[in-house]
Image (tube, rainbow, N blue to C red; front, side, top):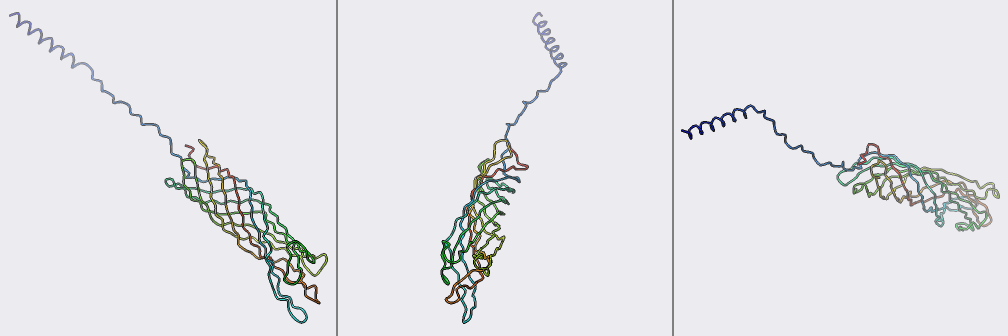
Length: 280
């Protein structure tokens, strides 16, 4: 009998506890909060930019003097041309540039235009010893001064490079322009019939080179070191008339043309500000 009572009490207690447990509120279990790892935005060279530059250039000018045929009583002095020794040119240069880049993977494609002021001024003297014979050192009668000068240059180039994060190594090439003025003074103070002449021309050339660009950390600024070779070919300048000599007719005056050949090598340091670029 006691054992039966004990079983009844235990069962009642269990039923009561179950009933009370059913009345307890049920709280949902929140899943763990997921926080993805913080990732820095990858650096990209895709942007447009504007900047300034400073540098220097060196080069060589080669002159070939051509004298037109000159008639005289009893005949004609035929036309002829004589190459003169090459002469070095050089100048400090400075100006600005603008361009745009587009990055695909590690490859960076771009286009850039620039313009620089310069001040190279190269003069030489030569003389005529006899018909068709020149001297490069100003001897002869009368000595002729031939001056060539240039005040600006510009270029429009494509760029292709390979980027390692904020370091870009690139090649560049395109078309360049410059203005050259050539003047002669063929001893006109002694021979009034010999006329000085000046001719100014703007002409194109081809330019090719390469450089390294480094973008500053947490900034839209970048610095560039670039070198280029430019050739402008040969161009003809009308430079007045020159005294020539022939036997009993010592002073004949031939129209003179200077065929000038020019190439240059330059080095530049550039500073660019990139618009719309991500610093990180």
